[in-house]
Image (cartoon, rainbow, N blue to C red; front, side, top):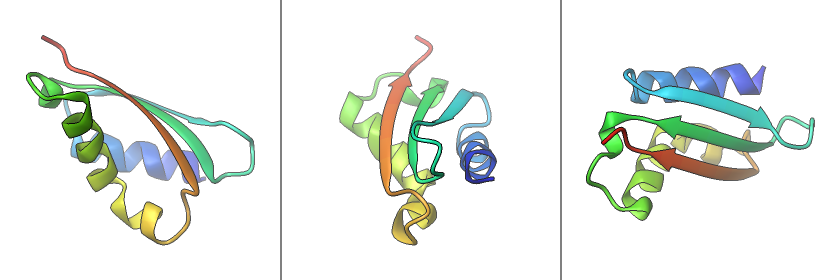
Length: 76
């Protein structure tokens, strides 16, 4: 369930993007997300990751996400 919720939040934040979410441990709190979006074009990797963290602020704050690995890429 958490995987779909995370995917939905990322799709909402990056509507033009391609999003994948993987539950790394099967426990529902360690995830790897990959987002490819035009929103990242021209941004540094840190700026890209800040946008992903902002999109997932609630599940990060409430402990739904304990550990998060992020991969991002622009389309340019």
